[in-house]
Each structure stands twice: as structure tokens, then as C-alpha cells.
Length: 390
Image (cartoon, rainbow, N blue to C red; front, side, top):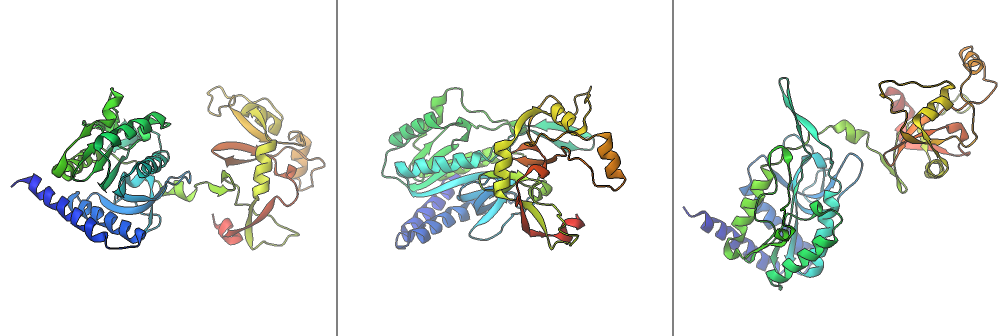
């Protein structure tokens, strides 16, 4: 058996479908057929632990990638957040790889593919995690998904594409966000020759950066080489365990901000039970950001409780800087205030009593009584009963 001949036949089939799809005049339909052809090839050839889809990828901080033509994901342990044959939404924890498919690769399309792949890499959760069981735990780096640009053909030479890749690499903000390789079927591959991933999710680019745009004129055997390179790389990836609670509690996008713990309040007006929970308005959030003052967490707690704070084990990070919203400079709680409140009386003086919310991944201490009128609105996504049920 000659494996090269088998993959050459598969490559011929892909190219035949490429020519056949050329008879379709609608560009979107033409592109989809070509994506489907390559997707079908990988679905048949990759081990069953890998599945193929298309759509977007999202992380638990509510950052999303652009549209991805071909996504290699885990079909067993990680659910799709939105599922459709044409467009699904995948949690980043389920992703082994992302591929941009091009019919004919010109300079503009290569640049766009770079930008799309860069945006995908930027939502990867770059935190180590632990794996293991039965009393054994091992630290492991975050997974670095495989990315690539695959084109059916090009009117350019491989040398010219390699030169553009070099320039794109020079201008990319983070070189690890580049595609692993660029492939033109029936012509060749541009990218490192050696495997980039190792044990425990290690990822290492070549020490000689020029190897990133190394070209191989693999001709008729390009599809086989791409398949083997792709399989070697994804087989080295250990995915991060998915915690769906992180997605349930992901920040909401409010204007230009990503906000948590701002949308689940019960405000009783004239002792009437509300129909819906309430949330901070976009203007209120903007006001909090613009008018908060930077303080240490120690200063915030002392302004809150009115007494020195000690934390010998530094479990509360009291010296960390946090934004505090107290524009009226309300005083801290006093024994009189506590006594009046505990006895059911209306306190005779207002005090600083902050609520903690998160804006753009930063913890804010906010005195809600200092917000302007109309800073809250009904939350149509959460009824009062749902709020009280937890």
C-alpha cells in the first residue's frame, strides 16, 4: 500500500470539487462548498476524538473570535453553546484547531486570514491548570490551538507568499498568534518544518525566526504533509477542563464595558414586589468608571467599617489598588448607625456602604446611594422570582 497515492487521490478529489464549485456563481455558496469538501476530508481522516465544525469561538470573559471556516473540536466532553450545521458557537476549552479556507489565495486574503487567526488566538485563556486523579496532580500549560491557512490555489509563487508571511510576522503584535502554517494544495507549505508542541502543552517557535516562513514545494503530496503535520500537532494538545459555571457567570457587554454583578438587584418601590429584577444602566456604569477614585483595598475597608484593617497572612490583598465610588465622601459605619439599624430604626445618618461589581475584569467598590437618579432599570432577562430562587 502506498499512502502517498491514497492522499494524492484525496487531493485530486478536492481539486475536482473545487473546479466543480466554480460553476456556481454565488460567491458565498461557492466558498461554503469548498469549505465543506475540506471539512469532509478531515472528518473522515482524523480520529473520532476530533470533530469538525464552523462558526465562532467564545471564552468565559465574553470575548469572541471572528467567523472561522473550519474548527477542530472535542465532540465528547465540551458542548457547543449554539449548535447548527452552518454556524455554531464553541467554548474555547473545546478547541484543538482553527483553519481558514481560501479558494484562491491573494495578498489581501492572506492578510485577512492572519488578522482573523490573530483575533482567535487572543481569546485563548492563557492560564496554566492541573490534570490528574487518584491523588496525583500535575501542572500543565494552557493549550495553544493549531491554526492554519489552507488554499486550493494561488496565482502567486510560494516565494512571494513566503515573503509576505515574513512581513506579516514582523507586524503582528504577538508572534505566537500567527498561523502555524500556510498551505496551497498541489503546490506546497510555508511554515516551520519541526513540530511546535510538546509534552504538558508546551509550545515553542523556532529559535531562528526565519524558519517560520520556510517553504516546502511538496507538490502533489501537499495534502498528506498537511494532514500529518496537523495530526502531530493536535495530538500533543491537552484541553483545559470546561467549567460551564464560568459561562453562566460570564460578564455582560454593556456599551464598551464588560460587567459582572450589576444586573441582579431587588428594588422594592412602596413595598410593592417588582415583576423583574433590576440592573445598572449603561450611563450608571459609565459614571462609576469616570468618577471612581483609586485607593488601596485597606483604605476602602477602613472607609467602610471605620477601623484599622489587619491581614497578617495577606489573604485579602489589602495593599492592592482598587477603584472606589464614593463621590459624596460618606463616613464609615459607626456604632450609632449599627445600633439604629439593628433596632429597626431608620439610621439618622448616611454611611459609606459599598457593593462590589466587576467592570472590565476590575473590582469596583460602589456606593449605590451616591448614584444619580434613574441609575437602575428593569432587567428583562431575570424575573423577581428567578432572582429570589438563586
